[in-house]
Image 1 (cartoon, one colour):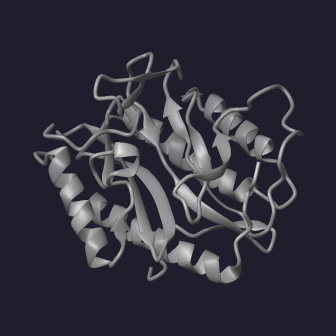
Image 2 (image 1 turned 45 degrees about the horizontal axis):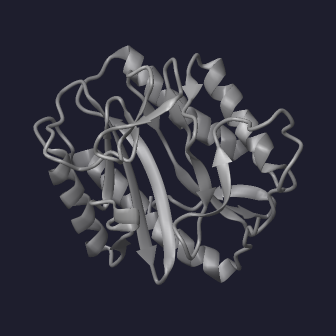
Length: 255
């Protein structure tokens, strides 16, 4: 497993790409309202990225048709931006990638459409809280499997289950690099495998299901739902290990 270490100058470029993603997510969070189609939301996101002088990295990646993954309600990840209309009470996952001077940014959030139920508020809070708790937990020298185990226990303690078969990942000159970072422990021993080191940059993305984390890919070949068919949530940040701690670089630094 070749996990690359980035120089400070390279982390700065990754942070620029990540900031553009964060700005775009915040923009969409403000403008999305009932009655919009997923395709319209995608178009707004792509246009905003272009205004920031970065490329929508997901468009065409592995054949994906849009620049924004729009995952509605029961779709956990990789939702295609089509003509479906978002309605009051829906929840919508937005996952965006950018490319800046050959370096990539990636982040995601799940947003409410208008007023949502308390159950959906709790569901969204689980993925968001798991993400930030995991970032606070990270320190240089711990193993990636310890991070996966922490995420799994956090999600289980909230009464949910992690999506199986999909994971967080390294990022740099490619949108997906080593290592893979599942939201659950693979095997029985978290004290095995690669260690987290200064200079590593990777994406953490809790994908939360309600009862059964078994993934099912829908007929469109992209949208991933859980076997239970219930609503899901997803949050993601890109972090860099700097001075032995995880620093979020997919944020709007102007705020």
